[in-house]
Amino acid sequence: RANLADPRRAAYIAADAAGALLGFPQIGGCRDEDVDGDVTGELMALDVGEPCWRHGIGSALHAQAQTALAACGFTDATLWVLTGKHSRAVVLCSADWTADGRARHRVLRGADVHEVRYVSGLPLGQIAP
Image (cartoon, one colour):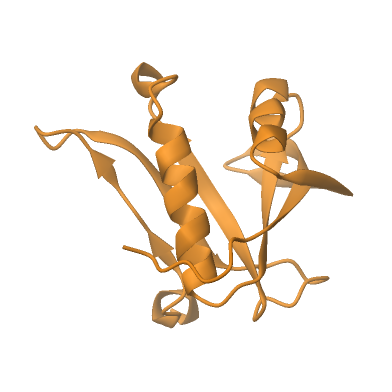
């Protein structure tokens, strides 16, 4: 419930003209214990349907998420990427995300997952549309 009450936590939806879901990002204050969630945001999720890959939808959603995080007053952001997702890591590095050396292991929906944390500065002074 506290997460729902946080005005800085949001999700944005991309849909086509017929209303079909294309993808979404989810943002909020960083949830990591070693980071101040009042000044550091988190890109909690960014998902684009496979038929929409390589059409610029993920890039547009990523840009919207960064703009929204900056508009919430965050100066930088984190995100977690599954290890072994080399193509995602390459895309993130080209978008000014850098692995910070932090890794974690957790169980997600019954599966063991290993993730690496990335960090990025946010564009200052932008206003979310």
